[in-house]
Image (cartoon, rainbow, N blue to C red; front, side, top):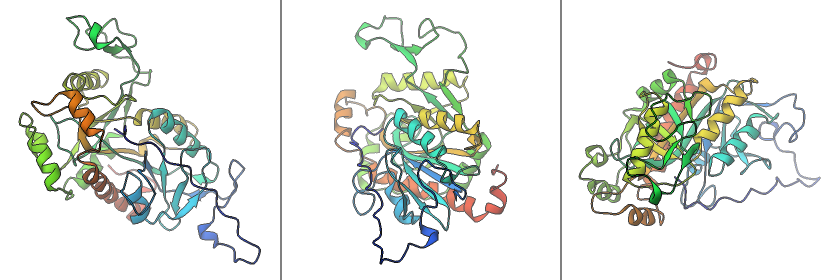
Length: 365
């Protein structure tokens, strides 16, 4: 959920060294030209996929990318003019960080561009999609971190204005090939509405991180205390398994929250549970699925981690409109969710890289 983000300027091109300057060490210089044949592409073990940064990449209020760049020493800048933001690399750990831009269109385009970049060898890379999100108060609290097994697209649908919904309809949204929101026909499986992640990998990541201590503070404690009808929303931040609903519209409110839950259950045939709302994963996962067909990525090495920066519906006594407008001034759980994102995700990254002799060949289970 990134409505307040206005985007980042593309980083400037790398400066050209004057003739008398010493050349940069080979370990920190890109080995090939952009969009050209590359005999020695950079090996990548982990791609950290973030969607936005608030201001600078370092030294100010952190968005999704900043903590990864600073704490994981992603200091080798690789120009990426065919994407939203330059990419950054650590040649020692072989971690690569990307900022895709907000929305499924940008994420699909950026991930496709990354996957086809001849300067990079992504054939054995793991992908960690690491972002903040809205979170369903029925399942968890802001600051909590959810590992997804399914991502469901919320944009491919029919819609009529809410003021014109028939009295017997639960929602003004329903799947493209259905005759209404109550049509009992089974979901189609080839339309891009649902993406199933590697369940063993997701469950392994959850087991590894379920005891990670997440940040808490009086501000988010006050916010969650307002959710008197939702016990899970009142808990301190925790790690859980929970599926993601991906839609370009920044939606909010109890009725749309019910729609997201119903849509997720429908397209996962009852196996999925909506927990987090975001904008990009349907584009990201579609791109990786296509790249996997030509060996440029491995869709079975993808993890999706989202942390709650805000609730997807208001507490009792507050209208959806009032709560949404207030949240757009700054998410109540932004700082906690960004920190949780790094703490939980980094434990997985550390484990994968520490045992690359094993996980480089076979994903953990």
